[in-house]
Length: 209
Ligand code: TYD
Image (cartoon, rainbow, N blue to C red):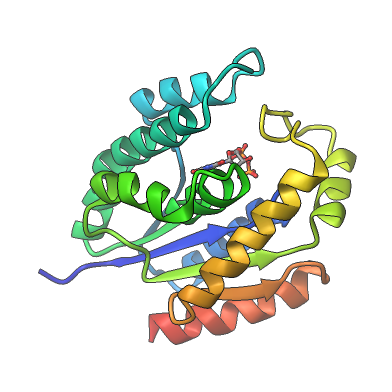
């Protein structure tokens, strides 16, 4: 059976993922391309419940491996309930964050090890890897400044991490970029949003043709 395309968006805090995703949605709508746009945990009841535990500001005692396992569990449920059915209907799936987030945040920044985090995620995601991952690159200092200006945004437990943590997240993504040059495409997200989106349109045109 013909499969749809699985496209994920990645990036550190304040990289502008949400704005970019809205623009991608508009781009696909204009072209009458069937797609779903989702994010982990994506409103999937079981995944939402797991996420509540992960991001709860009171859970300061959470062990890094517990955090990684919970993300993998939430990912599995969202994949099974939302992503796989859409791909099987040959739709494009746009997903805000996927396994690369776990590799960069838990594997690298928390120091569990990227290989180990990939191992537990292999069980969760099976053969499902993105066809294209758009990585929005931004200096974490600039990213965090952007977030602090956005008062509507809810502050979660990971936002409270120090700048150093977010610098490590970016380093983690840099390693992933090097290891997966065909799948992950990096976009300089410090620029004006229209310039950023121009580059993304090129990537989309390429993969959709
Ligand atoms: P979210 O509110 O979705 O933030 P953002 O708009 O930056 O995507 O919060 C998700 C947080 O969880 C974010 O800090 C990244 C982190 N995260 C991980 O650490 N590991 C993961 O596997 C995923 C999916 C997210």
